[in-house]
Image (cartoon, rainbow, N blue to C red; front, side, top):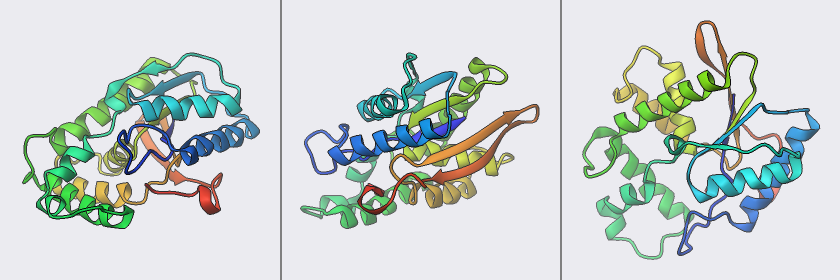
Length: 220
């Protein structure tokens, strides 16, 4: 399974859930990269967000993939804008740039993991749906399949953390700390590889981005 984070979205725009021009180009670059390496997925899966759909469209455009994708909203990101907006530091800030937003984002998600920000999907529930989405995608594809999933950084981080800490429940503080470390370094169109065998799913690589360089490498 190849888990792909979406391309750069439209930070600061009226609708964040739209790829920026850079995000479209990141998807096309990845499509060419995968085609050159002979990647021919048997199954395509994406979350239900527009940035997931547009990223997969950009990848398919240059990779030459034509099969329809399965849409599964369990691969959607947690509502990070609502979580950030609920943090006191956000209400006291005006005209945040990317760096300022990132600082508040990290403080807000830490509170969300700790359970002190309420009224949203809990961190534990988020982790549980990420695990279930991974398991179901692998099971539905079957043995010998190659699955490409377009999703979000937070979901990929949740999957990676869960695969490294298999004995811990989704809401455990250790899972939260590991998730946060993964989530803050996810790049747009970065790839994470998971191999599924007789003993279950295992993390093979995390956040590959050899296809990106210079201005095309973005985190937000």
